[in-house]
Image 1 (spheres, helix red, strand yellow):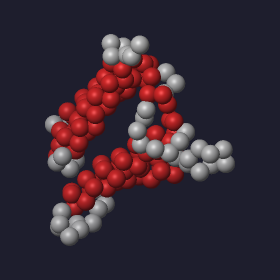
Image 2 (spheres, one colour):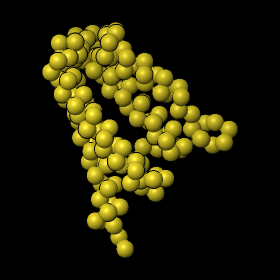
Image 3 (cartoon, one colour):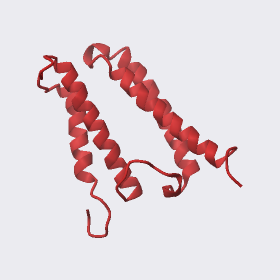
Image 4 (cartoon, helix red, strand yellow):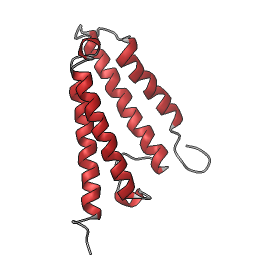
Length: 137
């Protein structure tokens, strides 16, 4: 924690970046008890992505936690639209990862990226619907 009560996120973001970089490009991973380096690379990438999400949450909302409640957002409608755009871009990246880059990446990479993109789409649509047609009076 920093002095003003905000949780530290920079170290976690740096470690996350290194783990994702390793999983996608460097490829250093033990074969493990399952005797499969690509599985280990995938686990390393998932851990990196999870740490990246926690770092993003801490940087964005200036508190520890995992669930971005609507009352934490300063401009939820604008942020949801940005998130929806980023999710659509990430969905396109998942297609590229599953097709053109497939020989260079672990097999389920495109599937996992599309899963994250779909979860982002779900959350942004939830926010937009909660502020629009489903808003309580």
